[in-house]
Length: 260
Ligand code: CO8
Image (cartoon, rainbow, N blue to C red; front, side, top):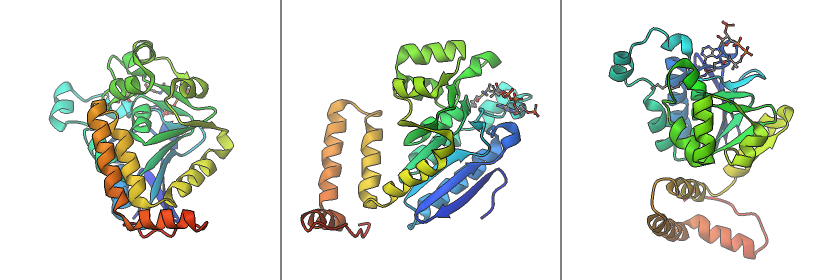
């Protein structure tokens, strides 16, 4: 399958998706949304694919935000009636039950930062810059920035970022808990692919349930989350991969996963 605005390749059990509008710093327009939605659905449906990496083409940007040129002439009624960009959360977050990583290689601004925050975790190059500069355009985050950034870094920092539109560098993003790790820019893709391959080598149901459990921490009370965690543990205990994983440990060998 070929796409207009992204490239997709598979390397073993890892899918690599690259935003491919480098001249526009990989700005996100409706076509990118449609392409990403299709690529993520294909990843989810492919039983051989176990982890996905999303990155940006070029060395400057992951994505510099929603495409301002596409939004320029749109009226409030257009945004409302089209429910512009509404698909993101449903398709990339809720419907993608398998793990995926954002490898942020440069600017992740506005919708680009929001897209990165939809990932299960973010690896960032040492030249990455995160921000919600929408206020400078007379608007505000519209794809989850005010909510996910606040949950990730807390109220004060999120509020300062949204109100001033300033950028956060990779060091600050790591200190604040927005990203998992900083990687030298030249090694980012390699590191992200290796990390993804390590996840892809895990028992797949356990990977999916670990992901679901961590996401649940943002959606529920502690008591409800703890009950759900226990139930998921109890389900995993019934899998063939649990029997294999524990036997492999005792027998001092690598587990051979069946994925069930
Ligand atoms: N949209 C469209 N084109 C862009 C964007 C963008 N977001 N960002 C950069 N570009 C284009 C530039 O127009 C330029 O194109 P051209 O050469 O044709 O003029 C090219 O990319 C290179 O950009 P610059 O020359 O500006 O590069 P610099 O290195 O000088 O600056 C910056 C890099 C700082 C990243 C700068 O480009 C910038 O500030 N970009 C805009 C960042 C921004 O404001 N992002 C937020 C956009 S709004 C948003 O994301 C809201 C999402 C919510 C939608 C929800 C709907 C419900």
